[in-house]
Length: 255
Image (cartoon, rainbow, N blue to C red; front, side, top):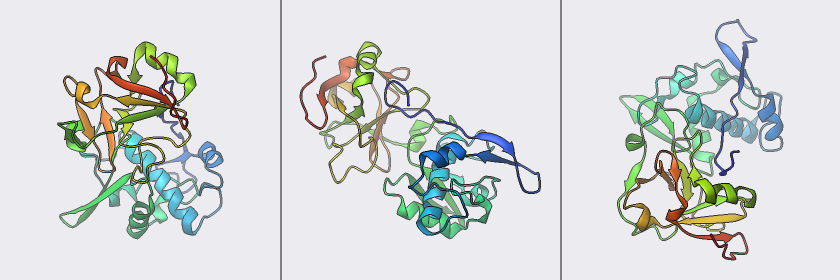
């Protein structure tokens, strides 16, 4: 995690494949440790663990690894599911991706409570994309996201972060870091309709003045209702902050 609460991907290390020696497998041992108890354990995996681990790998591939894996990714982020299932990778449950099926992919998308993926069918082919969170430059903002043209319908636009990051944010603005966009949520962490865009353990909320920002900044919304912006050269200056509050106490923080 960077100093602005934006995810910086920890890419898996390439290691020789343990099968026929062709292609490459990725060492995900560190990820299995981080996700232990949440579907990331070792072994052959089954049931929820199997599908949860598949979803985690899909998130990584579709957000961060298209170029590295030579995947044919469209500017709107979609890739062919059959191309994904040919990759010589293992999920965090130590299951070869090639052993999964299209039905497994559909189930991973259906069960993802953050709605991180979207599936479409075109010309008899099934395509999948990550809705937001990309670092790969294979995607183009205008193709991936819907533009926000008015502040109407967006009474809340909030970025969650941590006290330890606040001085840096106030000094240099919210930065996208290695991601393509700065992320905002359209509601508070406790709002039932908020499914993605903010970590649950944040202790500082930074509210964006949407009307002011739209004067010179492009804002977008993803299919899973995350508000995103490239800011100005990757930065949202603090002059566009509407207010800052502690969370969950909601005490005002002067800036």
